[in-house]
Amino acid sequence: MTQASKSNESQDLSQLDDIRWMRAALEWSHRGRGWNSPRPSVGCVLVRDGAIIGAGHTQPGHGNPHAEVMALRVAASNDQKTQGATAYVTLEPCCHTATTPPCTDALIRAGIKRVVCGVIDPNPAVDGQGYEKLRAAGVEVVTGVLEKECIRAQDDFLKHIATHTPFVTLKCAVSLDGKIATPTGESQWITGQEARRRAHQLRHEHDSVLVGIETVLADDPQLNVRLEGRWSQPARVVVDSRGRLPLSARVLHNAGPATVYIGTTEAMSQERHDAFVASGAQVLQTPSQDGHVDLRVLRDLLYDHGIYSILIEGGAHIAGAALAAGIVDKIVFFIAPTIIGEGRDAVVGVQVDKLTEACRLLDVEVERVGDDVMVSGYTHPIVRRADADPPLKHRAEGLEAP
Image (cartoon, rainbow, N blue to C red):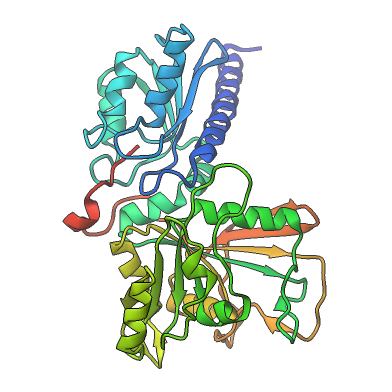
């Protein structure tokens, strides 16, 4: 074997190692998903001599440690020396002081010799400067390792920090022939237990769950996470242009500490407005679009109230309106091996004359979930750099890089 061949083989093995350890960092990233908003859920592992010596993810709450610091603390608690180790981080380390000191400084002080990252941080306070600071200190920096996977793991943060609008996911459970209910409205349960569990995990991972008034009138949902263990509870959002939400609805009474928002128009009477406020809900009024709530305005109003990600769960008219308004970033469909025939369609109100005009997903993933299949993908590429105007002061408060 020539010297050049040996060098290439060594490089290939190094790249395989980087992928292996970045997957481990992604596993830590997923552990924090749903707890850290508006911060990203970042994962970090420290590797020396082919073994993990420390690992962690960004901790919930402003002022609590980021993933890199958690990994360093774990290594120190186990008497592991970090000098000469490699740090694998799913997002570029921060280089500024917000509610926590810079992670770049912590890595440099710990003697980390190499930092491998998945994706650049679009926060204008970072945006490549973390890499520059590490390199200036003599640390080798490798970027773009498992970039697509790292983008998916932090898609909500990457969207809202760069565009100052919430990340919106449209979720639906359908039969093989695209129905969400029988003609009589029966829909429980089209999908199986495992798919329903994943749907509750999606609720946990989003700041809010949004439905239309027809869904509430038909199903009286709670819109909370009902899984064993400790889970975050999303805010509940009901789109109700005329104020038809019953004051006895479970969404108003089973929310616990979570906030209930009602998106409406001027068609709601003052009496109904006052009744909802008295029940503890917050009423957000938008201009009327042909008698309906303007979903783009509602999305932005929710952002101003600290909602950085929205999970749309139904019904068919809301799904169609959201797609028509262009606010959907990601789509998740759970497809059951069932044929309903005549029934209620998953999406209503969207019409295309040509297939080239249809919404076609990008970066599609297909996963078996019990007896069902989960198909997910994005309606457009996720923004990865700060290309929008700087955030307003009230929107920037509390936002920080990991």
